[in-house]
Image 1: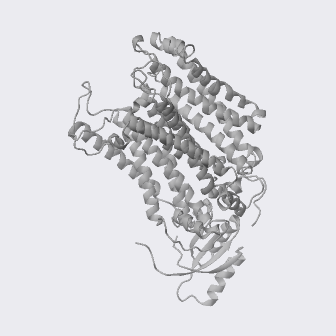
Image 2: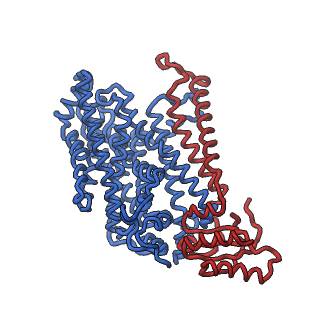
Image 3: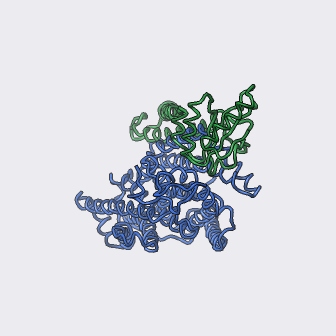
Length: 456
Length: 180
């Protein structure tokens, strides 16, 4: 059981239920902060850059990218895997912590789930545009066709990717929306604006909070949580199989599925930390996202960072111990040393070394430092995907085949565009959706307070 | 499809979870039947006191199992019956089917369970619910007792008194409230 005396209060300030509704609805009910519109403008500019890059790709062809016969994957797949990794936070947070009955999830899960849905959409854009003819994307699904019918290859990790990511997006979006229904109903009943009353009334699906409704709601949350928890493991395992089932040195390893899953949860938690510190600071949610919440995430990150470090060391050790000269070359001459050593050492330093600072309580309590470390984690996880993809592909078995890779402005544009899309969607989320799950916070209020909830 | 039967109800509004639970226990001891309870967040003790249970998890199991079987049947039919392709002599019935089956089992469980929830709970975009009290999604807790036809004024007054004596801050009438 949660003991507030030991673990601290989850919601500070002796809030009443009405206070919680009012505080969380405040960004929706009041004018956007002064930085919101300029931030929106910047995100739209980034998005426009991405749209231009996407248009160039489609009209010119994949030749507009820096890829070549040797380097068949580049920024597209690096960024795809990076976004998918970030997209693991929502489910990891909401679902693992829901199943484990961790009450501290309630202040954070909504934002983490929103981030998941947007990040998975950003991720999905990369393979889509890499097809060159994205309007033919439906070819990847098994549908009755006039070519035989010729079915997709059900044994291909690329097809598994399609269904895993579609399922993940569907499950995450459903879980997110179901969670928001009672909160939309709260806004419908509390807002004074007739337009908002109408819009949130539609979004709330007529929710009234009857006992039977709550019982079924809880049952559904449990079902979605229980079904989606294995999905967190399977999605990134399947993504790793895009690499691991090949025979490319540096990819063909059995450690890849767990290594990718842990990496994904690591980057997801890193991004959650970045986002929550931002929300807490700029929307003054300090009493809901307390130092205790940040501390708990930091503790998890230091543990996952150790696993990441172990995975990196294991890969290097096996490259030597296996006696495979190709593996040895990839790791010792093309990662630890060589052309791409910046990527490799960037990955090790950002993911395995810098987060170790979280062992120190002083660091965990200093939010500016925590924020900077969370950015390093995001960067480190990008370096990891760069290292895996570029080092292994650039120099494989045949030296005459070797080639280097650097992205073109078009590839950079697509990535910047997805960053713009992510920021744009989150800004809308900040303004129009309750950032913290109102009903869930109310549900944990009684048991996690040092003093009795004050009467309204 | 939806129950449009009109009904009259007596409602007691509470502002505290503990008072509500206590009131439910006391009303259960009286001869009046609780028709429904409305709360701003799920309270397990309410479910317990009203002896409620959900069969949704069983349905979810059936949905997921249906997904597993359908996906296996489809992939087997597509790969081994409809258009078999020999890839390096590998068998058409492959162990790797499990991956698609696993993922799509989850998908069918999620989608069908959610659709069932919306269906049985009669939730849909644009539904105009009967709002018993504007605070039920905020900070108020409501107990509803149906006003049976032929219920005398004296009995109504007695029910209201029962609400008040158990800590209700407000009592009133409300039409067309859904049953539990």
